[in-house]
Image (cartoon, rainbow, N blue to C red; front, side, top):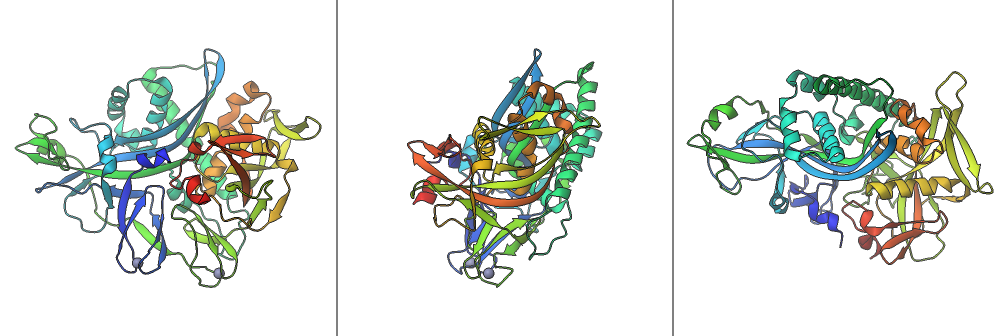
Length: 502
Ligand SMILES: [Zn+2]
Ligand SMILES: [Zn+2]
């Protein structure tokens, strides 16, 4: 059993062709309609906005909750020592400052099926007045410091509104991120140079946003920093959405619109709510037909996949930057016949300041940080990153072990002969985000590199999908040539490896 499945929210969409209901987990974007055989990909503007259907009558107000789910990494110094912290974050946070509402949605809401916000729904949908970037930052800090959660969310509500508005424009979700850069490639082109502009753009944005947050922190905590502190953090493969929960007011008292319970005895809630800003109720996603741009045939792929296959013209198509783009695929031959393949991204990267070294009889490789001076070496190499969502520690193992041995892995063109392929679910933009962490993990002189992590200038210029075979051994998936194993349970997508194996 894949336990992660229990923690996922579901939403009921409908087939744009025949209208049949299609329930998708929050990790899924594709509808493969069993009734009319239509395949479509749902493409949100920034992220999905869903709501819980109300169970009561009356004037309903839908309160926003931010939904965050993904692997979190932080490298920071604590008592003079550089530490690495990893967490799997799976949470919902109230997105508007309102008293008497729970800070986080309870477990029981996960059994409810949500619906996508679409045009002209009745009721008032409140706009979040806490920016996603601030929520993300705060969640990260709470995870690190272990401070009481509710207290810290309360702090969040009292921080400067102006600052939050500034931040609003800086939110970068993986899907919004797709839309934020202009990769000028047509569908026929290969996936080359697709990510270089994206990477630069993302790093610039992140740096700006980090600097602002740093400023804000200094104001609040009156913290002075004499020497350069180590503080680098990253979310990889995060799923972001906005969940609207219904409430209603009776005699000035706030009530739960699903459970029909009183939320508190305090009166005057109608006045407080009326001061909040509403958002326009409209559909915020588009659907993209899953047909081969080359020949028009229906594309095949799992509902949580972003890579699709045309079995008619034998081509692979990646959903990237709101389009389907041709993508080359490679694979490694398995040691044994029965196994399962996990996808990786193989990226060509450039980063000044690093030297690549090979040790242990020219078999394993790692890196040395030389700093960013005038005579800094220019690293040009290939880095592999997992192309699926994993628990954070396993993500780093799966990345570093394969990279250490990458020089000795012989690649073949095309798809492997097996059908036990795990879908590509991690966008290439997220893979680019993980490069700093992977380089750090593979660097010998970590303490020298650590303070410079936020300023690394990594550019990635070419992306390929590589399917890597693993053998099932009890609870592990073993890669014999790169000498490592990860747990089945570490895979944090909808599809379990079991599904692929069957
Ligand atoms: Zn249909
Ligand atoms: Zn085709």
